[in-house]
Length: 321
View 1 (spheres, rainbow, N blue to C red):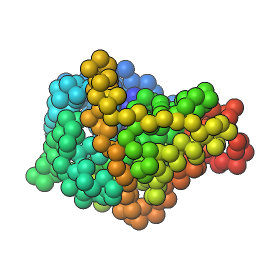
View 2 (cartoon, rainbow, N blue to C red; view 1 turned 30 degrees about the vertical axis):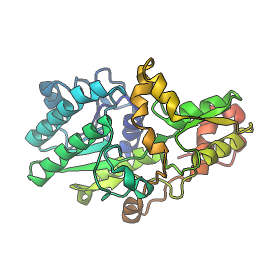
View 3 (cartoon, one colour; view 1 turned 90 degrees about the vertical axis):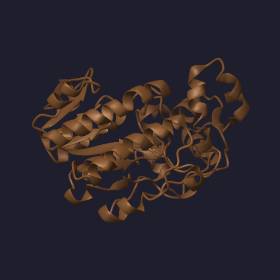
View 4 (cartoon, one colour; view 1 turned 45 degrees about the vertical axis):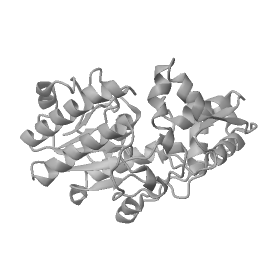
């Protein structure tokens, strides 16, 4: 049995699809789980409740923690450490391997231009401090010999059917699809990596089913040489056949808006990731597994073909798995 804790998001969904390659026993756990594959087992649980986590993992060999909490610092501060503590305890007690799907919020901003698995940890945001704390909880359990686990890190992500958490979806794809101006913030001339979600799902399943991948940190496959903000917008507009109009939202807008709009306050502390080059290096994974990440152009075309088919210029030249 392989169990996905927090199975309701896009990563949990893609992971469930990919795990069919390795097992026909997949358990999906969330507060309102829905089956992805015909034979999936669903289990309703609140990850803040230790007993429910323990029950959810009974009979499991591998657990994947892919939960996505609301994008609010207070919720992260209250919930993430408790969730991680419960999951580590339950996995340790039942000898379940853990795969933690993570992000890069904890990395030192001075090293965003070339992020690897050994990039220094120095969070400068409240959310980054929380992510550093829960990742350290996993690494500490590993170092004590209590737990077999791995951390799979993704850059900002994009892909078909990606929810609100994707900047590219909300600020570029959606406006351009309506022939409106795209938006960017920070520096539109800085390169910015994005991880293609189908690659992330496939790679996370592969890591979980590779014995010698455990007790390590891995960057999930992400194409090299990312476009800058302006280039992302021009590429997407070209594939949609629309004008690449856009405007950059200046920092002062966030500073003022956060006084009135709670989400702007949540986003404001992360703007630094868009003010300088943000390049994510996944060469460790690529070399180990002979994996070629989806190119940015191909990713853009697949998103358009899936979500905006009426605008797709390349309707017949894409092969889907």
